[in-house]
Length: 119
Image: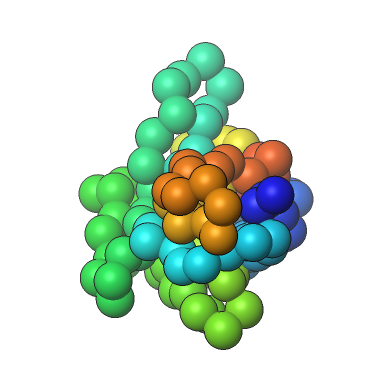
């Protein structure tokens, strides 16, 4: 069984920084993509950032403020968030497309972690 476990999140003041982590574990053969999505109250889930094969892509709303990175040795993806704004408040979800030893490719979601940007 493969799973994603997130850490980080919490309350941060506007203009502050925070880092989220997401570690994949289990019978992993390889990881194709890892990324972060977020869902604000009353809104649909949206892509924040994604990394695949060494390339990265960001939502326009976070470009220049957020950085996604990946540690392949640890099967972990990070989201470094800076210059945070109240509108960044949301539940952040890790997402990964993983090739497992048994099931082939699976798409997994983390449990979600709340980031609240408020003074």
